[in-house]
Amino acid sequence: MNNTAWNAKGYQAQCSYVWQHGESLLSQLTAKAGEHILDLGCGTGQLTAEIAKQGAQVTGIDSDRAMIEQAKANYPHLTFQVADAANFQIEESVDAIFSNAVLHWVTQADAAIDCIATALKPGGRFVAELGGQGNVQSIMSALASVTHRDDLNPWYFPSLLDYVTRLEAAGLTVEFAHLFDRPTPLGEAGLDGWLEMYGQRFFQELSPQAWADTVSAVEAQIPQQYQNGEWIADYRRLRVIAIKS
Image 1 (cartoon, helix red, strand yellow):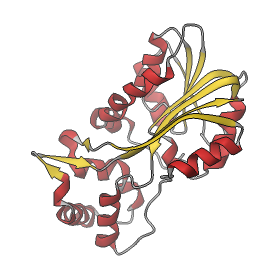
Image 2 (cartoon, rainbow, N blue to C red; image 1 turned 90 degrees about the vertical axis):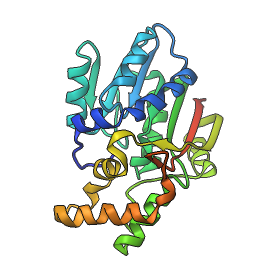
Image 3 (cartoon, one colour; image 1 turned 60 degrees about the horizontal axis):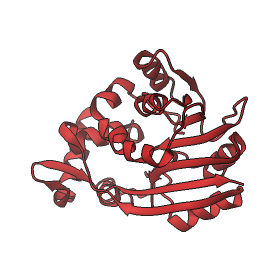
Image 4 (tube, rainbow, N blue to C red; image 1 turned 180 degrees about the vertical axis):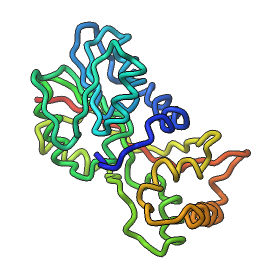
């Protein structure tokens, strides 16, 4: 995962849409009482807690220490650990690995998939959603136009074929894969808040005024994403379910 520290409190306050949309993924996890489940990239722990409510023994891991500290504060009765998706190890294999809105931050995709495959029991399932090919394309195109740079995308947004091929090469049988558009309202924080949370870390050299000018210029490039009084991000998501042979 990305090594830059997150603003965990700001994330929790402004980005509830992340775990709210992840709730539909939980229905495909179908956690059962007594199962051992790993929440990979748990953030501040909201979905980890939902998995626990279903009776599973769940551990949340995230590469960002601030996220883990916030998760522990939110849910002190649950287990959270700092670990990176591209090189994590666990003592005992698990029945399922759940991951929501995380793996597009992991550019070492094959390393992460190998860790996932290793951590699963035979017959264990991997249930995940991540940004797919074309995710936030209008925002990224506007950023490139404004900054005159096309190398600022820090994410891995795979095509369906690319990701399925990688999963199956690691010994996972893909039972479900779907790439779909999901326009996502950005709430009160708006596009400015979205860029500050997810993008400003990649523009650390800019002064506050230069950053504000950049945000304004990006907004001016994509007026179509402002609808009914709020900013809409053109999310495109890839959802997969795979089973370890």
